[in-house]
Amino acid sequence: MSTIRFSLRRQKKIEDALGKDFLKWLLLSLKNHFAKGIIEELDYDPISKIIHVTNVQPKTDSFFELYVLNKTYNVYNLAYKSSAG
Image (tube, rainbow, N blue to C red; front, side, top):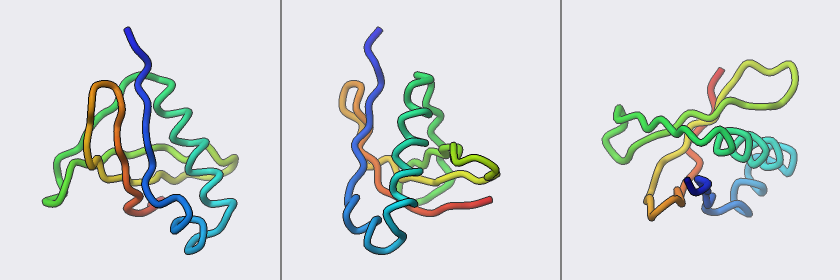
């Protein structure tokens, strides 16, 4: 079985708007989430499917929402939507 991978769009824009630390925790959270190998896509958004990724930052009870823009083979192309929690 091949590893599931991701590509996050507009990382520079996320960093400029939300900060370097935010982007760091987002990427670490995505790496942790995709390492598990099971990706649950939610269908409640009319624009695109969504995935929820738990924030791995210590002492934080939150998650990130990302749009699934495209899925080719084992690569998810993602765009940041929001944070909640």
